[in-house]
Length: 195
Length: 195
Image 1 (cartoon, chains in turn yellow, green):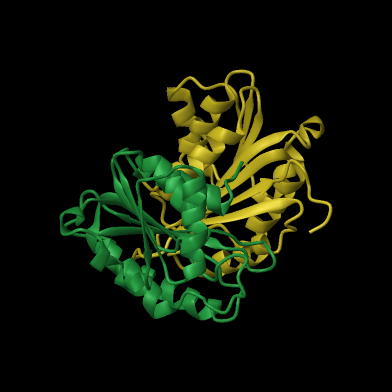
Image 2 (cartoon, helix red, strand yellow):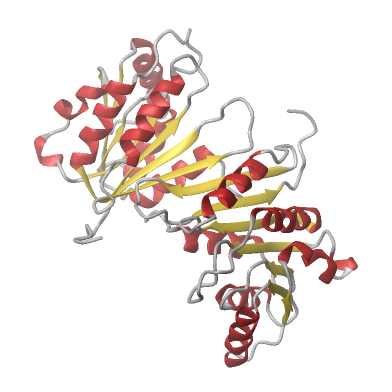
């Protein structure tokens, strides 16, 4: 009955996203979340899906083709530069974003997301997110380097101003083998003036 | 859109509890959760509501009377002894329990929940909870002694066997003044044989 981390992340995205929205997959990986977002925004929406690895872009392209998806823009790029690729007029209208940190599932694990780039990407998206919009970050940290990224991210997210953002950590605390947890950042619809 | 801690705890209780259930309010306080549970279980259900403070029992009695509630059993008792008061035949059928840790709202804060008693109470309820049942614990820890109870509880809950229980921590991590977080313990419907 308690929802697992990934279904819970997807539920938050479903609640935040409307048909016609512009949204972001910050780590497209094998494309499953890109496909999920694509269905949520519908034909009139757009998904910007970014990944630094050629293999990820190829796998995503092939998955989207199989499902005859045409509302996505795939970007072979470090996600810290995501904002360069989002049209100026979409600024402040982004409904949601998702990140899956760590390595490309099925890969040799040599390429991993890194703290500086991940935090830059998230920070950039907080700026162009609309009020009520959500960034869902699924934090895998069992791999080498994962703990460092996790700590840096918690430090960053934990310091976001509570007048402007809600930052939720959703985590199962009695599981072995470092399962992922969820960080969800919501831009408040009515920033609180005084606290 | 992200649910705050108390509404989220209530949502989990709503999902776990059916009409006719036997449930527990482990810290009845001023009675608001007792009333909430009473409505969820309906006339054919029973709420056992316990508190160590006379004032809490009085406030709860008065609130329930006002709402013409008759499906509750109020117990002036240390919650570590809760199991003594639950009929033998209800063992294994308890649908849910809630705890609000800390002090009685509106009181002089001299009486607080304590680690040993709280953990004994929760442990006792894990034994009589039905599969699929949930214990929701709202952890206030900003008061003197609160940190010690919080740490002991996280240590206890984090060590519950993942084959039998899911333990979720639901927490906003960018808020000042030590707001409460939620610990939710679910008894798995199908205990995992191997992990």
